[in-house]
Image (cartoon, rainbow, N blue to C red):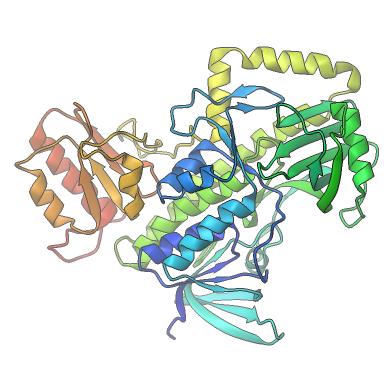
Length: 495
């Protein structure tokens, strides 16, 4: 049975759109099915951290996103300093999620992704050769689409995950958190503003366009998610926690939600994958949700494209679970610890808690570790035994001899081999992998050669003074990771 599409993505949030855009850019036929009719101006996520900005930079979108928000070099409350991170983005960018979605949507459409709005996936059934997806149309009728692979990016209540029969173990981290988007007559002088005092917690975040996001929680007033929220209730909690309601008025959105800590034990079942909230959900503390989701998709997209195009064995797809599931576990632990530290301290001990936390975080090694962990800069993947120490690590955005940066070279969504210039040997290597790998030289002097994956992690590296050894080893690495040379036939060796 032939497939209607190579990859069907369920969900047009940031994770689904980035994945779809990457696949389409690589020449993979991709369709996105989305329940929503159009763009929403309402969103829970608003923090974009450094590693996500780097992933967007590698797609030519970071500069445009920077124009939509406010850059804050300090994570408030715990006063985590991001300004010394080894990146072009030493800050958290505060911008509503819809701004990120808008850029990713435009990119996906530019590359030919088909977006099926107001359609809902109601079932997923796979066999050894493909996946049948039942889709409900806006008229209420159902039809089936067949895909080679399916990716569930359809959120915490994922139909894809449920169709696979996968559990979603975990617990509720916090109940009855209130959200509001409001105007303010007297906004805070140094936003974002956040505090937790006794039974009350509140945070005020500016979107930079005159709207402010307010999150508020009252320990002694739990309500179900569907209970109505009044602006006066939020203002009252803000006054308790922050000492002022800042003249909140004209809310465009009021809601209540609970935050869970849950993770699927498997991110892949045969030809079906989970990314983002379909795979893991956690507390909003640290603002790591959207970032973890986008990075899931960045990890999976190039692997799916390589397998679909016959440039890599299907075994490569197993590495998605191996690499991203531990990251999801870490984010759950870290965000949960931050949330409990903020919300479970009795009023009498709040001052001591804040003083202790800030004292610890002023210790340089601790401060650096926390900043790198929350920003995602320190994420790395396990390397094979005996591999070079750089393998699996994030690739720094080094300057190249042609005037570009590495992340600009990555915008072609290919592997990039960064190696010292070698006029005698490099031309043959460039010819052999023409169209599959970009081979560049770093600015300045180095003895290292590194092969950088499309998701900006290092696949292979060598430190050797011998040009012959460097080139021979690079040829072996390119064959393993990028398939056989353009001038030969065969299949790439398994990873």
